Image (tube, rainbow, N blue to C red; front, side, top):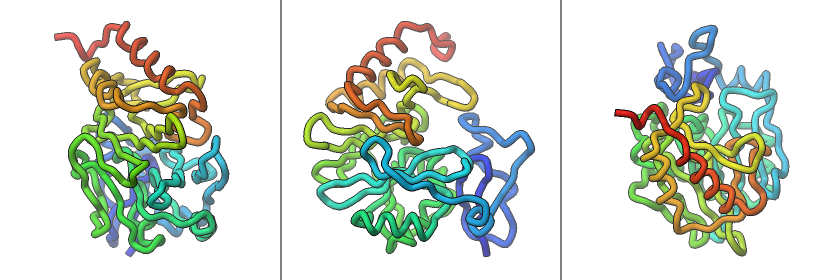
Length: 270
């Protein structure tokens, strides 16, 4: 039986003879149901129409689906002293992408920032030998394909290596997190949608819903600010290929926090 995949968000569901009646992730107000209504595909159909683009993205080995599919996130192969991590997931798994991952040292674990990027995380884990998938426990309810590889972490941080740490920030989702990696200096921050790198690549934004343009309440943004206060980083790798801040990123993020605090936000009104 196929594991159906939502065409709008790219989330893969547990195997079943029929497609699910709806996609709860798309029906949530952070996402949306496609204008033509709920539509589904399968791994086989997706592979027939799409491939994975492989290559360097500002110094990080990256993978994304081409032509674009679902939410166009980038999956990154992130080196650590405990082995490579896969940051985020894609809806499609291909032999070419797996061969490239193995050629660059393989992967020891998968970590994902929030439910919009769960995608085909179980298929990726299976294809890489059943490696663990790290998700924050606050987002457990959004898992649509349970699996033995899932590792639900709690608390403010989770070390994945002595130079790589997940940081719980909340905001976009209750369990939204980022990955901080020491990189011989200030380090790199992989931000997912917790902090979304803007199109000018000079600032970041903080939203409850990106497609529906709903900002976060100020208290949630302050929570993200506090979660990151102790960490330095010179680069921010955003959610998709090319959406990166490649220098003075800590300064850019701090300036974005200050800019956000200057505006009145409707969610904060009584």
